[in-house]
Amino acid sequence: MNLFLLPFRNFTDFIKNISKEKRVFYPFSDNGKSHIIEYKPEQGINPDFTKIRTAENLRHFLFPSRDVVARFPVSFEFRANPVILMGVKNCDLRGIEVYDRVFLNWKPEDNIYKERRENTVIISADCPEPQDTCFCNFVGIKPFPEGISDLNITLVKSGYLIEVFSKKGQDLIDENKGLFIEVDNDSIQERERIRENAIKRLEGINQKKLKEKISELIEKADKNFIHSARDECVECYACLHSCPTCYCFLLSDYKRVDNIERIRTWDACYYASYARVGGGANPRSKIDERFWNRFQCKFNYFYQYEKFFACSGCGRCFVGCSAKIDIREILNKL
Image (cartoon, rainbow, N blue to C red; front, top):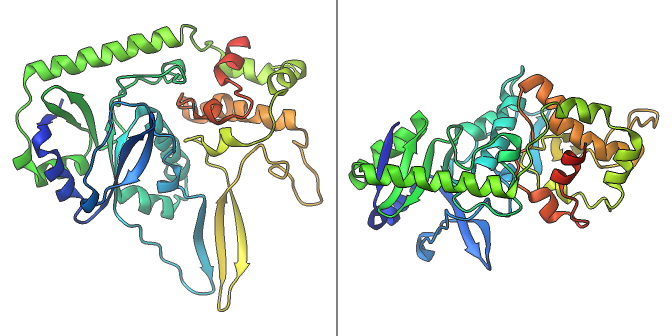
């Protein structure tokens, strides 16, 4: 393990240094909830790395809801602004892992996503206090990162215990080496205790495990079960727009004064028009079919290709759901 300790007294200097050439975003607590805000030197910084994931997901940073992806007939070249995202939880790293597979693991690569990804430094953080809405362990994720991010923070008594996962992360350490001190064994043991307690808490929250053949069960679910599961859905789409792993999009061309712009916007499989094709045919014209496609996508289709679920266990879907439909309850009933 490549570990460093950033004392509390040096944290502000570290933020000032890394924000000179990059925009820095971090989690800030307000009325018991965590939100993503941008660091402004004149406002200081008071991050909260102990709470669960922020109310907002990270899609907007790497896969915005509206994006210009091409212009015709003029040439189009995209350049991303360098960004540092701090305090990212492991459930949101799952979303980034999904995007990396979708946009970078298949040919052709998505050059716009790649440009943003390469210009984004991710500093993740342990999740020591899981809430009742958390179910990362249910879908095979731990409450602390072991990769994907560039650096990871664990808040201990002596400061911020930082683990390096990538060259981008090591470069940040090297550029600020005077701010870090050697990690003592007590801090390492404290981190292990914090992580063990987080795992135990999650095991108490999610006492049932995801069924071993969940993909097959979802594939074979009968229409009555699907209708019953969907019955209270009011099609508010909060589950899909808050999800950190949804990646569907729609391309539209718009005529401007001197060119044509191709715009990429988020799409969602609950939309009645989502599967509609030329001539008006729609293989998923019924809401039950669209509702269940979400489960198929997260736990069956994606798993067939990548061998992990496209669900992060963040709980945003049913926190935002108007009907409070808990995805765990549906999966447990299969």
